[in-house]
Length: 252
Image (cartoon, rainbow, N blue to C red):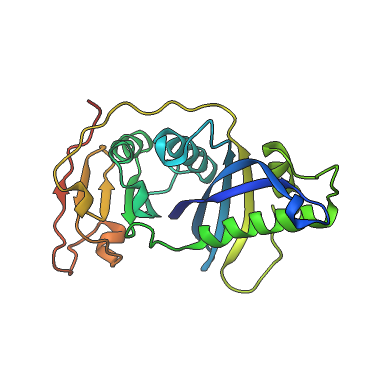
């Protein structure tokens, strides 16, 4: 199973009339996009999860607890820990922080599932989550422009943005080949706790692949690899620099 995640740029709620200069933003929505890729009868398909919250309540990268909370919801929905042996996560380098390393080991142990988190270079990772985030924001803006008036807007709150997604975007039109089969929308209302200070280990920023076994032990490697040995964790990786280093994770 493949999982990718990233924050989409804030969606701004705005009131609009015929004079562009009189359009103004009233508030913003923070959007975390998570996609899950699976195979069914030889066909690859995707499901997308949108987690919408107030950036003043949960400050994106400032609170790793938000990411952990959302990933736990996704894992529950797709059955991680119930027949899924390995999950490969992909994200931008902005998620390469101490609390995520510790969460990776604890979650692998709790769910008895091998987890691997692969990082792109900072601000260089592009994936399905970028396009999906754009779909939600562009469709919402177009809907507001078509349906809204200067006195009333159909999407002006977090709840209305979630409801719009559930009503209009949950079931994408059928397409040939790999596609998004289903979209799910969640409103994260509560302020989530920031995890306790986690242990740092030397050179953590130099590694771009972290994996945790079912016992919760975390190891790091300089490069990601997608050969059969690395995906299934059976056999030896043929790539050079393929040695895994013990990542001493945990909370202080």
